[in-house]
Length: 191
Image (cartoon, rainbow, N blue to C red; front, side):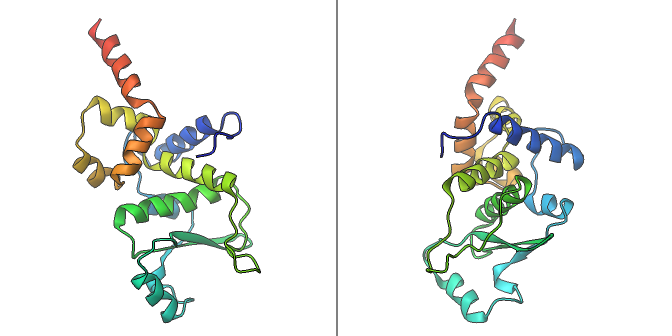
């Protein structure tokens, strides 16, 4: 994860997570389904396995590929944007993939071809780090991480309710310092 986020970026990510929950009638700590957010933002989400614009041999390759290198991408034609994601991944990974692609759109990242003319992957680490951070914050914002810790919600329940992996949950609890925040809240309420 890049240490070079612009000033205020992390707070902006938390604000987006809160704003979209408000727009969808949810509390700041409640789960947010990335597919519902995509629909709210009028961004179609299409599965790789059924996408009509892809040849069957491409679909078969990603179905059978042991490497999980392709997660998703945004098809962009001016104002029209569409997320294509790898539905051969586990459902929790799919949620993370979709949230990551939504983050690119929300942040207004330039959407260019994912492959350079040389055949190499076009990759901008700074942009990808921002999308990783915001995508994860959309799924588990700081308020949700603190809520989960305060209420000692089990991993199985978090995975079921929030649709995230154990790795993403641990990452968000760590980077939001949710244990310390929960400890401070408990101390305040004990007074």
